[in-house]
Length: 66
Image (cartoon, rainbow, N blue to C red):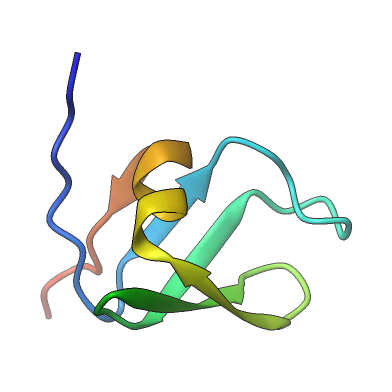
């Protein structure tokens, strides 16, 4: 059961554990060996290893095309 997500800047990723503010959704600001994620609830930004994000991803939303 190895899911491969295609992560891109602007995507919203839902992770396994919630942030202390209660939100489980994070906006991707940077993609590479590390990701920069911004909490959609409180706006807090963190750097996270790609391996951790891939392991804990529950769903991935692409931004709507305009």
